[in-house]
Image (cartoon, rainbow, N blue to C red; front, side):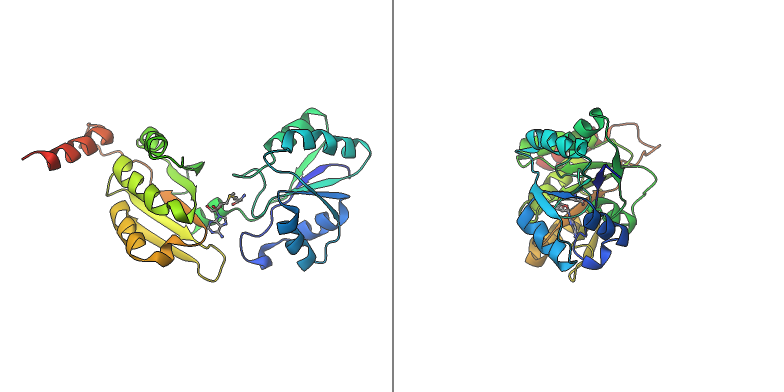
Length: 249
Ligand code: SAM
């Protein structure tokens, strides 16, 4: 039926595409892709010949009106991103909100998402978590963001790029403390899938001395703030005191 379908695609292992995803991608009139060349490879792997159009951060708002036009002509449209679930640190938010506003159905398909997949095997509490996307590239912004999350009791989930992983782990040690439990999930569903876990300081040391850990795609997760009933001084204050005491004679 006429709708915008939100279709997740694999995050590494092509076997993770669903049969429903293939069916929808075959049957719509148009597939909006983050990058038509990138998705072209995936689609041709599955023999899907549906017409493609580009929808990325820079043209999304204009493109949305054009896609609404297609829907009004009775054409069904699918949205995919380079990998995983569209809209999750990927384009699509403006499109979905505008399509809904225009009164058309938006139908989501469940499927691969790096954050959820990594969390499910992390060993960290999964009853409550907060997905924070990518940490800011600049140190000041990163520390501000992490400091604001320091007392959050929920598991923290971040996306990370391999060339920033060391900086981000350093900021986690500084803002959340050297002992904060961290799990780093790398290359999930791919050949070199690795889970590293331990206190932030130890994970940082491992990643620093093993350059292989600074390659590929990474989900970084932190245990939430643990409420210590024997202590009523905020973690930020304890960390500051610890830093100060190291500087004192
Ligand atoms: N929409 C995607 C999803 O649903 O997971 C995420 C897109 S975001 C632009 C890309 C980031 O997702 C990467 O930098 C990495 O942090 C994470 N990611 C994607 N694939 C991954 C994988 N196979 N293993 C670990 N992290 C992955």
